[in-house]
Image 1 (spheres, rainbow, N blue to C red):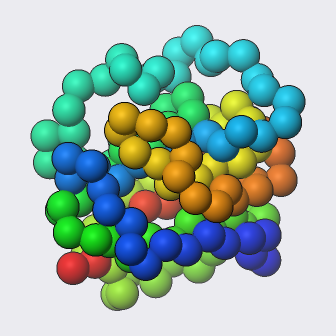
Image 2: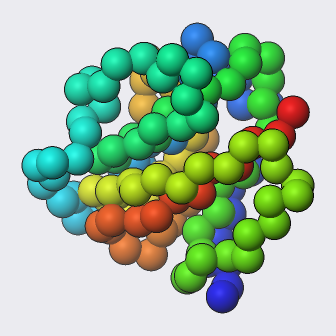
Length: 129
């Protein structure tokens, strides 16, 4: 399995202790998905590692600067659980075919990661102290 691309930010500052990944500008935009959560249709994370839906992912984190890496793979990468304190797999639907780090009160703020297509993806979120 190969890596299609990667975006890193070693000084990402989450608003209100929440890591945010949003759909990028992208090209052809899919319509909203019925059945997958819209970003404003969910309650607070309340201690969860992450939750995602139609064009968004929120992760619970602290307020200091965070080191974040987004990767796109053409298949499931090897699982190396020993390196991570927490790991979660969740569905994510990209309406645009690209994603980027964002904020709760704004859009994508930095480089976008090209996913190669739009549609439904399996996302693995991993965190360590």
